[in-house]
Length: 205
Image (spheres, rainbow, N blue to C red):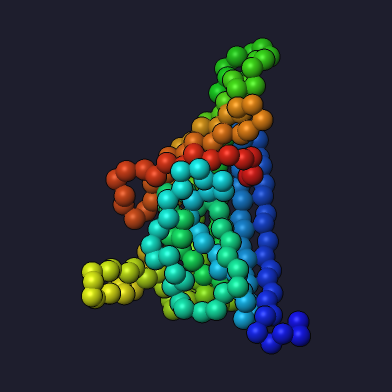
């Protein structure tokens, strides 16, 4: 706190709700957001999932607005996009998933193998945005696209509808030994014909 160049603060929230729709069909909903300020603030990268084993990184790798950052962090989940599809010192995310245990719903008896017992289908939608500053606006939400063709670099400011990211897709979950395995295929509203595949570990959300 005594260092004029090192102050940083951060605040945010993470709200989750799980609702039983019908028998074993579960609707999971999550809303999260955070803001970081100061001269050594956090740069949040949106895109992808936690513990993404086959991860892909989007360009640009540098912050959209050239400011001073002391830390960086992933803000997930935002499926349908690569890591760093959006970035900024503030972000907001909403995730919606419909989860359906396959064999537990079809077979009316105990299933011993954990691999089969935890087998689950998932349909999801993710919506997110990132910006610089406390509140989003046309300037702070700007999604820039860098087109490099040496010796010229062109910076293109994308239209408003491109700034909010929206992805959707299907996934499957199961447990293998002590690990939760997740495989998702996701598309985005920007029209990519092929899905992005996400192989990841973990049970978060």
